[in-house]
Length: 277
Image 1 (tube, rainbow, N blue to C red):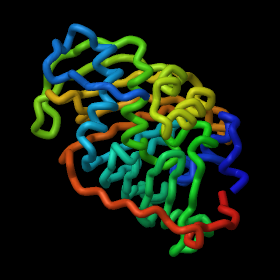
Image 2 (cartoon, rainbow, N blue to C red):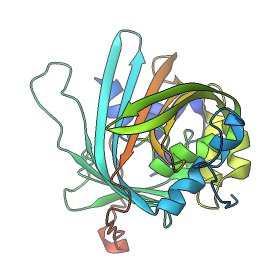
Image 3 (cartoon, rainbow, N blue to C red):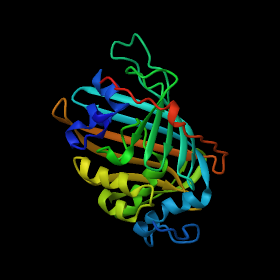
Image 4 (cartoon, rainbow, N blue to C red):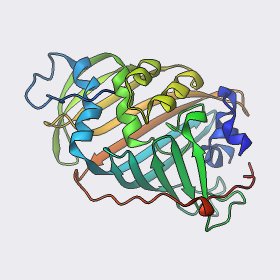
């Protein structure tokens, strides 16, 4: 697993990007108080509290989309599943795009998200089909904001704890829900300082590993201050191709309170061998 623990930004796609390389290779708790406050009075403060509103909600279903572009190559990875914001545990099925020739499809990857760890099944690259791959997200140069092909839903929310500037855009509709649209920029280093215990190390790694710690975003909050949709724009250096990879990650949250049953793999079920590039 040595390749996965390299911390140089240039190794993100090859060493850390267990899912991304497949494609590119072809805080404190507080009452959210958002429901009754003016949407324009304090956009920055409202977004700082958005992650706590998800904890108050308990859980939700999630859909994700990650678009990556480098040179003339553009790929989209999609995911769908459930997430428990109080335990910071989630389960997602991740669908990879077709091979460049369009002749075959990758099997869906099952991902389990946990504080400080990412587990993947059907990883391929020499990993037996009945085994899981475990990655310490604190050792990844993107803190698992990109590596898994999805952004951990709670990590996506905690990025907003580092909001530096934000403006209220107006109201709109997301999946049938009336929401408030905000646009701004967050700082990953600031987010790491205010993050939950489970997110601090990963966000700090991302702050150091990305091409820039500044993350532009658009986020949509409902009347309870819960995130219904969030879109981040990340940028990291592709060590193989010596270029910058632009990543747009979108997370859609819905069906709050949905049951979540995530059981992490036993040690005997985790693959300890070498993973092919």
